[in-house]
Length: 122
Image (cartoon, rainbow, N blue to C red; front, side, top):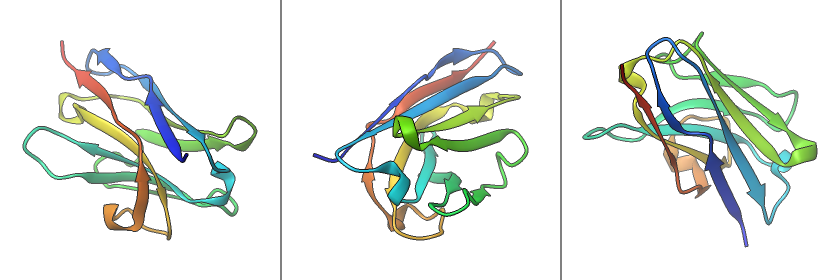
């Protein structure tokens, strides 16, 4: 079955860094756009990063642009999100998902992981 499993979340101090992983199974990750999303308490799901299937073109949400980097390793069937200069406002559950188009809209993503918690706190 199609599965996406996020890992790498945890607690980090402001200014710190984390790398999240998204391991895919049941399909070839290289054949689909991949997105990273997050949902903070009391807020909707926010698209923060996208990577295409061709030439690894990327899109970033304005709130994370310049701090976060999305990438993929097709040989490992895994996508990544490197998060630098983390701030308390970045605290959220982070999800990866398999998409259908060049978009940061959650409506265009059909399969989702279970999420991993990232907490930025002193």
